[in-house]
Image 1 (tube, helix red, strand yellow):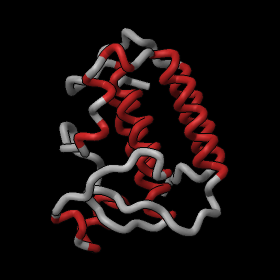
Image 2 (cartoon, one colour):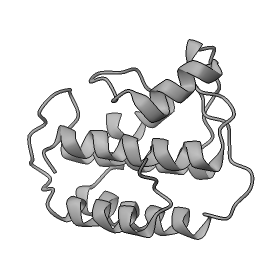
Image 3 (cartoon, helix red, strand yellow):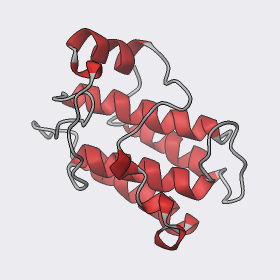
Length: 151
């Protein structure tokens, strides 16, 4: 599985982002390109612990289900997300495309510099996760949303 901790994976994501424009139409869903970037960036902030997210009860906390969702099944379109990952995007005055693009590259660099980190925050739906879990989920989440916009 591809992990966000792999330098080549991060480089690929940055190259893909370079092809995204602010007015790119979504293939599905309600996000604009800017709102999607804010959402993805906040997901990365959640992974590093910079954005605290409230835990919720979920069947995804089951180890087998968590494994299947992170490592086996593709992300479904329109899957629910933590409300905290939608806050900034719901307020257009809080997000700007070029700022989000720059923040994305900075967040990837931060995550890359933390690849040897031992403890990681709990995921609001999946619960406790390993470095490997966060790496695969992080890449898979970004890939899902970039695909949403055809990049």
